[in-house]
Amino acid sequence: MGPKLLLRISAVLIFIHAALHTVGHLQWKNVTSPAYGEVVKQMTEPKFPFMGAVHSIGDYYDGYGYLITLVLILIGALLWALGDLAVKYPPVGLKLLIPLTIFIILLFFDTIIFFFPFAAVFSGLSGILCSVAIVKLHDGHLAEVTGTVK
Image 1 (cartoon, one colour):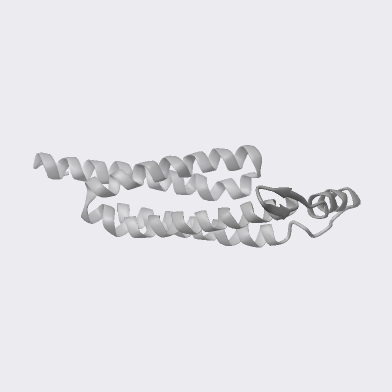
Image 2: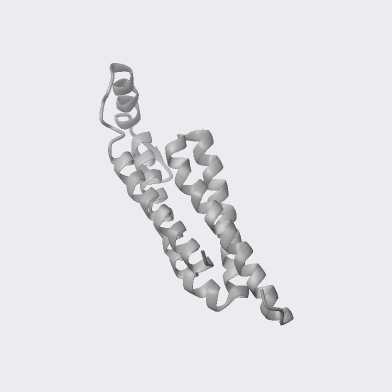
């Protein structure tokens, strides 16, 4: 499997993660128990001024949730574009792909620690695929620079 396909599969995993994250986030206010209902009430009803705006903790929670969806879509789009860019221009592609992969791996650990394993699977698999793509791109780039056939 070449780097382009690995990065495209990784992008699709991140897009799926974004879609499922959005669906899950849109349901957080659905009351499933009296205790959960009380938490939602306390997060959404009291509003307070902060830095020139009046919002509830629930409003901020919504904002962060939508922001994560946008970040995931951006990551997916970058991975998709890197599928072409990194293969054509490995030095540039690697300079972008390495920090992006580190971010995806950190996202995996954040998700597994603070959220739940199902969501972490997407960033975990994506991080693995990106890491393999980095190795393949690096090997191909070294072979190109040194004139050896890989």
